[in-house]
Image (cartoon, rainbow, N blue to C red; front, top):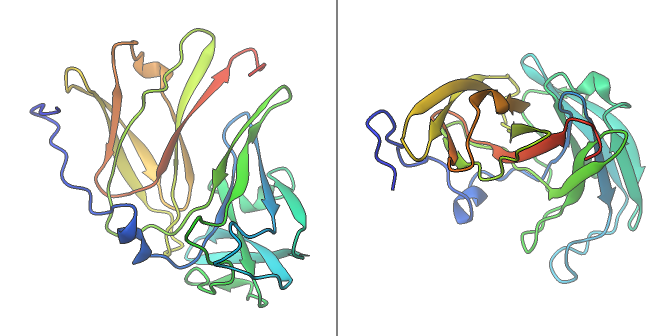
Length: 249
């Protein structure tokens, strides 16, 4: 379908599904912040099924974030089976240097910093995964989704489409979430294309171990256009975010 002269996507080096299992360390839960919005994360200690993971022991909830060449780790609380906690970006703003930090459950005390992400498999499930509710809010409204993230491999690429451009009194953003075992924050280019003409419309920068916000309205996408985003050197979880300018949605 797409064969413009200046845009020839190569096969992605990273695929979901069974291929992802090769790279799994353990599950991490993202708490995110984007400009003008606060983030929240609701975690409930209940297993995602009743046949695979019957873990019921008390565990430690840690917050993990990248800092130069190491992962900083801070113990937040202990959680018992059946309990629920909410974490908010206002309380953890010192951990959000890259607009994201990660909540990690562990049965053991973790050190204050590590060179690689911890690998204890305390909450392991595959059918389905352990999940939390994470999202954004302002004074009038909030939005959320069921989230978890695994570290992406070093060699990866991202090809995604954005069919959710909204029009009217709405600001459109594309958010790209990445987590890598390497604590360093590495930048990579992501190119924007028009799917109809194949024309390259611009380029932005995405970052590892970060939540990258890309502001889309400056590209003036029309209803007949389907935006394409292609990053050769970094994979991530992309999702669209629309914000009403009057703050009511």
